[in-house]
Image (cartoon, rainbow, N blue to C red; front, side, top):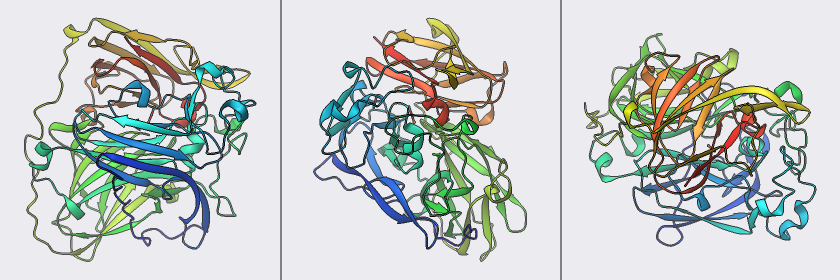
Length: 481
Ligand code: C2O
C-alpha cells in the first residue's frame, strides 16, 4: 500500500564537505534505505543517500571529485549542465570500475546495444578511482550529477545514482533572493516499488551487466506510480509565510510534469521563474503552471505571504492521474519577516546570439526506429555509435540546430548552453526564456536552437534525456575541434 500524501517531511540532501580544499570524495555503494515508511529498499547511491549529497561550489573555482565504485557494475559520472573538459565529462565508455575488478577481465560478455563499445577494449578507458575535474567557469545554476554508463544509464539513475550541484557567485548572492532555509533544492523523480520493497524496473537483465534495454512494453520510457521529492514520497515541508526559492529539477527517467501551486481554498499561486537550466533570466517571468521535462531545471520563487497560517499549498502535476497528480505540499505554519527581494533585473550576462552570427545550420530528427532486431530511438535515422563522429564543429563557432521530434523528446547538449529561437515555427514559449541545456520537444514539434561551441575541444554528446530513449540509441557524438 502506498503511503498517504503529505505526511513524510521533506528531506534536504546534506551538503558535501570537501576532504581538502576544493576536493571531494564520493563512494558509490549499495545501501538499504527507507523510502516508503517502514519498507526497506536497496539503492545504489553516492555516499549512501538518495539523492546523493549536494555539492556547493563557486563560479570559476575548480574542484576535483574523486569517485570510488563499490557497486557490482562499472559506472560513469556526468555533471549535467557543467562546462567540463571532455576527459571529465563522463563519456559513456569512460568507466569507473568496481573495486576488485581486474580491468577488462570481467567486461567480456558486456555487449553494448550497438555491439561495439564494450567489446572493443580500445573504446573503453577504465579506472578504479576516477578523478573528475570541474573548472566551473560558468554562470551560477543548479546542475546535477548522475550515472551515464553506455546503455545502462536509465536503470542506474532509477536505482539512485543522482545528486545535485549548486554553483553560486557573488553577484547572485548580492541580489537578495530568498536564501538559507528559504532556498530549497528539489529533485523530483518518480519510482515504482515491487511488493518486496525493491525498486521495480523492467530491465531485460536485472544484473545490469550484460544485456541492456527494457522489456518491450516500456520502450517509450519507464514511469513510476510514486512521486518522490528529494527521495521522499509526496513530502510536506513546514514553511514561513514568506518567499521561497525553489531550485526545481526533474530527475525522472521519462515522466513529464506541468507544475501548479494550489492553496487549500483552490486559489493558485504564481510561479515566478527567475532562472532556467543555465542560470538566471534577465528578468522574472510569471507562470500559472510550469512544464518540467526530464533533466530540466527551473529556478522559481513562490510567495506564501498571503497564504492563511495553518493551511497548505500543494504542488500538483497537471499531467498526472490519481496519485501521480500530487507532488508535494507546503504547510504554512508561521508568520515571519521577509527581507528577500526579487529584483526587476536579475542578470546582465545572458549570452545573446543572432541568426546572422551562425556559420551553419544543422537538422536533426528524433524518431523511433529499428535498433538491432528490436525497437529503438534514433537521431537522424541512426542509433548511437561511440566510434562515429556525428557532428564536428570548430571551437567558437555559432550554429543553429533545427530539431524535430515524433513523440516527446527532451533534447540535451553537453558542454554548452543554448537559446531557443523558435518552437513549431513560432516564437518560443514563456518558459523557454533564458539559457537552456535541455529543450523539451513536444510530440510532432520542431524547435530551433542557437549556441556558440566554446569552452573546450574534445568529444561530447547530445541526446534525448528520456533516459530509456537515451539507452536505446538516441544519442550522438559532438566533436569540438
Ligand atoms: Cu543529464 Cu548526457 O546527461
